Amino acid sequence: MTRTSAPVDAPGADAWEGLVTAALLGTDRRTPPGTAPGPDAPLALLDAAAVETVRRRAGLRPARAAERPQAAPEDSRPALPPAAARRLALLLADRPGPSGGGRRGAAPDLTELLPQWLAVANARGFAPPPQVLPALLDAARGRTDLRPAALEFAGPRALWLARLNPDWRFALRAAPGGGAALPHLQDDDSVRQLWQEGLFAERVALLSALCSRTPAAARDLLATTWGTERAEDRLMFLDSLREGLGPDDEPFLEQALADRSRNVRATAAELLSALPGSALAARMAVRAEACVAIDHMRSAPQRASGAGGDIPGGTTQPGGNTQTPATIAVEAPHECDPGMERDGVVAKAPAGRGERSWWFGQLVEAAPLGTWSRRLGGRTPREIVALPVADGWQGELHAAWCRAAVRQRDAAWSRALLGDPSAPEAGGPGAVSLAERAKLLGTLGAAERAEWVAGFIAAHGLSEAFQLLGVCAVPWAAPLGRAVVDALNIARDAGSYPWSFSGVMGLAERCLDPSEAARLDALLAVPDEPENASPGAGGYWAEAFQRLVTTLRLRAAMAEELGAA
Image (cartoon, rainbow, N blue to C red; front, side):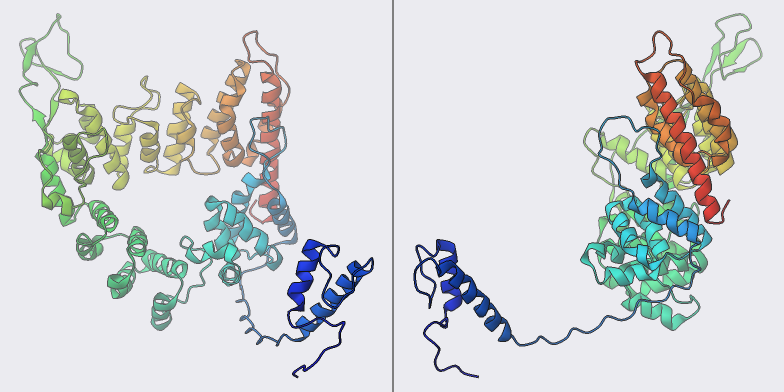
């Protein structure tokens, strides 16, 4: 309808702008349109604004209704037991306190129990109550370490929700297993359709699932789209081949050595070097052997210095001569040729590293460890590691062997490089850092790993054990748990500065077997403080052990509620 005229006291076509101006300046300075000046002007302004608001809204045309979203997918997993569902709601409602330097008190930290709760729930195959999914996704949004387990537990509805809320878009490019609903792996058409049309998280999860069951099918599927994938996606897909990696993957990985992305080339070379029978491993072995040999000149017979005395590690010869231990000589490469670069050797050394030592370390790291027994006189890994290395190359050589043992999952070499946990040097003959020792331990079985770390703690205490404890299976085996509790008790009785053990105490809360709670009751009392103890240390220790016991009992209750006691 077109309006041809209006009453004198009605707003005009540009009335809204006039009303806004009058409101900003005040009715004393600007009279509202269609209103007489005076004390009634403010009320008239409000009345006119109300009328104009109705008029403006009445003139709006209704928008086209948005298309309703599809229904959320079904989750066929069994529902949580009621007690476990209530526990999950409590864990998600808890918020971490301010990150200050104050004492934590005796109350358990519920935010640190959520990852363990999720691990048990996922192992039991439960589905979450729908009403907790928003809080669960919010928790995963704020903690990247929580995302894989949280999205696995959230199931296919996590992706459905993520498409509707931008705050949860991280779930669409999450780690493998992040809530992707996979088709039956025997259904080739569905597998191919998901691979071509699915979200990134779904495709990674699909590839990982295929790698764990039928690696050849995973490799063939990846090859169909390899040339059109983005570099960062090729890198992630290639990394998925670690699960089920075998000799049949070699041709595909050899082709990836010519990829246009440096990171993809490096990952392909790393995977090939983890296959001791690959052509790349053989090429690396030839290069590494040219750099390492027994120095026979330094191993020449020498006269023993004392009557009947032996040089450690040597052999006594007829006539009183003693053969000195064999010595390893190193001659690092003088250049990084194109063949080395194609096989994954990075030519440019990091700041502070010499080029030759940088190239040498990469060659040894990628060579099959079986090379060295043949090259160094048929010696065992333990005998090889015990050999002296000339000219200060021992640290570089042993560090490269450490990386090779981790990459090739070689337990015999890992044991040799770790050495005895009670050795005075506390690091073994070859491991040069706690980080390397932790990685070497990861190649051993759970029981052997726990036993080694328990021996380390018994000999050296807890001051250097934090990284080593982090690679041990949870819950800790009984010998390891006893070693940790005994070391904490010794530190408490000695009046040690208690805050320096807060990290280990936090690990114990998450990793100690809940059955140990009863054995800790004797440590809950405030101990007598020695004269040289830190002020207030006794009270702190009592609080810490109280929190530990309470947390262990809470973990036991959580497991029982989930039916996993």
